[in-house]
Length: 304
Image: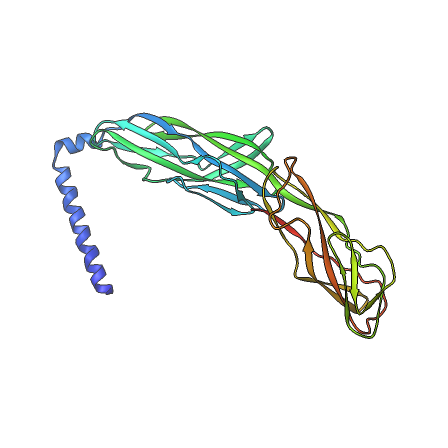
């Protein structure tokens, strides 16, 4: 199979060489090859549509030359109108063109900025105009979000320069507020004593406490509370831990079965701020050693 492949490549090269010889023998071919672009017309601007970042994680929005949109990292896609740029070239029939694109540009919204780079096209930046003296170039690129990228309507420009003639393409993106979460209230299981049989103490998201095989002795039990901020009317999801450990010196207890009161499909209100509570179950050993036990747990929110 390897030898057959090499033979096929050799025959293709021979055909290309012959074609080049035939073209070089035509006076009109030489004249056409020397022609250059006479006009560059922007038909479509580059638009990344709507997206939101993450308070702690960077990411990207990519628009391909074909107009497809994808996101990576902490970026969430919110749709909107997105499209690749399109520039039409004109010149002499069968003439050549040679174009350049920038390495990167900045798009801005007030004092905030973001980088656009990795410009790509659907056809090579050098080539031949068709028999009518035309060529079409579609352009995609990558928009970079910093962690906590500020919301705003971002815009900028870049030039596609072909044979010294430039076409200026507008670049736009609507960046929505990143979603953030803040702990505003701790979880407290209160005071208790074991009964000689392993048991549990449960605090609901509403702050109600109950127990099985554990005597409750008061204290101030409470659910944990979290504030979420982001884009108004946006859907979001909550990720709770599977378990965490409380410790007192070398002694430990496990907390699990975390629950929240945000509902199956939470939505940020129009003002962009919401609050939800989290409850859980504490597992108490039959002869749990006395002490003040403490620990932490993490809750994560994401746009849907």
